[in-house]
Length: 114
Length: 115
Image (tube, rainbow over all chains, first blue to last red; front, top):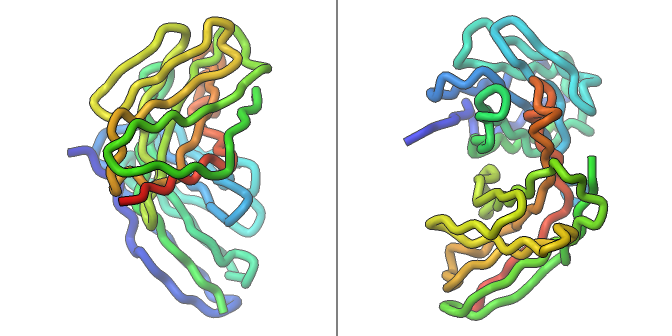
């Protein structure tokens, strides 16, 4: 069974803390994505990566950074957490190119910044 | 990206068929129609996709209008586990590069299934 796993389902952090969200996929997919999901706004892409050490900004990269040191792992970093980053964070992966019909999502991490 | 329009919510009775509509009047000739769904407290999951012909898989059927300006996701017998938000998304594989694999999710349709 294909799997995308995320390090935590629920996380509570304080304003100003550095936060790491980890995502691991076991499907040997080239592309990996970080989205955030907020009520009424759908999913918004933060960053994506199409290969190890490669990254591209999505629609809302401000306040975030990413790291992809290994093909199976894609980390999202909140350098200094703020309350407006309270959200559901979803990681996804897919094959590159036209083979990537299905995008596989992790279960999500609900982050609360107080 | 071409835009899709879906009703905010729909209700169905258990074990009855459900037809979830999606309008995409600005669809281009090379856009594929994808459906994903998101169960409560879970990430989205792929349901089905198609281009012109109707498609069937173990989860659902996809009926595409002849002019491709609309489509309908059909759940043949709704169960309580089908209660979810269903998203209709257009994606053009001709523009699929590394960035093209991203998906743009709108508001979707919240399906409620009554026992």
